[in-house]
Image (cartoon, rainbow, N blue to C red; front, side):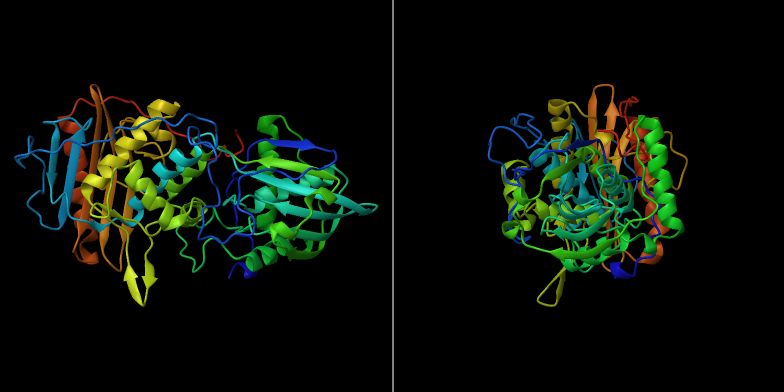
Length: 468
């Protein structure tokens, strides 16, 4: 349980620039649901032509032309292995497709995160930022009541809480009498420290959030790892030429949950607003480190299974014959006592990769800003043979053990466009993991050897989370 946390946190927080205003407070229109459960979309677009970051929504043609003959047009290793599904396409064009066992659905594992990436980019926009709002009012000298509205920011870690604490102290807050949170504030302090964690509840409950805030906002609970988090903030302040003074002592008497519709925000006299990093950096962490919590929290914030199905049909052009997604992370759900996994066809993955590529062209970001840039990013992909990527490949890996799956999907930058590829291993024994990792890498090597590749992809520094 998170309430027994010992603050083993070392990562830099998802936080960008803080704008402080010290004036009479008015209720904020922030787009989040008020008093609604997590089964409904928590962000809802009121402008059908623009995303939340104000980027225009345009049509996307992500069709993949398949081969009518079913014959391969190049030699690809291991295509006779019935446990391997593979497909590839250059630009989605006719005559430039290869695939075997490419229409049947298989467990997606963490390749599912690529579908969440496409959805979040299309719904929110690459420059979307979560806004944490801290309302506060004076009770007595140095003592304040505070209302914290996080607007469903899924990355509320120790550094971000210490940063907010420093800003409150700069405005004279030495101690909090009562800290109120609403349903949009879910605090999971180890969110970046343990990306592969499988929690029973995502996002964490408001009760857990209350416990976690009580821990971090009472300095008597701090230890060596909290000091490390403070050091991260000092380093950030130096890099950005900012003043961030985390107090040596701080306390909160009471942390309570109140439904947002019952909170009178206008009764607070002052407000501090903290903008998160852009969405691109959340997605980069998700796809490099395969962060399950961030992914599933975003998936629910956007509306979960019901809303995703609308997106897959309307924007990806995929039916339930192509794709069944129940979680953003690729972790299974249990329905009536039966395990249910995300399932998708090889073709559904290629169409989604092409969708992300087209969005990157429309919205001026790089696929390497959201996917793992092979050979550059240290993440979940470790090749078994020497491969010279030179920023030519971006990808997402996937692995399940209970229902064995070993997957990878990505894009390769070519002189004449983009190659989209997907590799699934299924119906195999976990003891053969190294064998199929090697077969996977031999297929990737065949791509690098056959196609005229170019160093086309960038990356993002995940240690620079504060940069907006």
